[in-house]
Length: 211
Figure 1 (cartoon, rainbow, N blue to C red):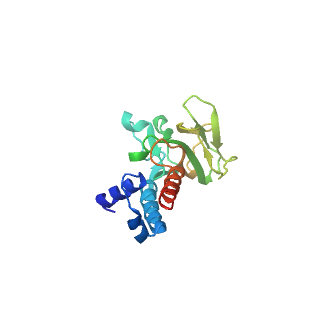
Figure 2: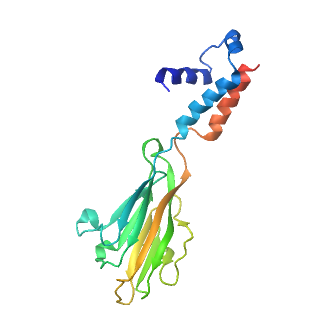
Figure 3: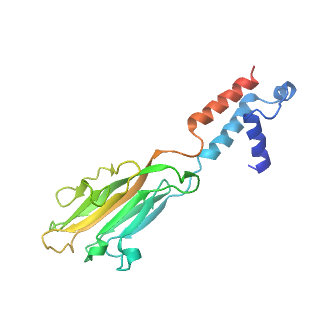
């Protein structure tokens, strides 16, 4: 849709353009409403491709301060696949965190971070993975050789989710493997048009030009 045509539709919806009854007589109101519906929904429901970023404990980490504590962001178009493949972990590679953060028109929106376990194998019970909302907060969820539910769980609204690997009793977790999907769920929308708003404007247009 061109800028000029979009401005015409915007003026029609806002009542700034005078469409005489002779014009309305030649136009099907339902057709006009359909065009306006497409225009308004195109302003809201822009679907972007999902980006999946991979992160492997012990692989994507160095002793440099910028890499030692990984922080990732997720939203409706960005997710992570986090894995571990038995690598020896330095202390500075044992913790990562994620935060829900929108971009562009969604940058002010609020999210919670969610985790779905895809695989967890630890035959020697050598490792525990703890999740918290902050570095010193209570543990929200734990994965280990006993507890490895694939049920999705989420952080608090607009909270970070911290992952911390803990090697148990001096064991070597070289046989431990896991994969988990880290996603975001929007909990509050601060920008853009809502579906209720769009529906109300369409109904307003229908009433205005069918009287």
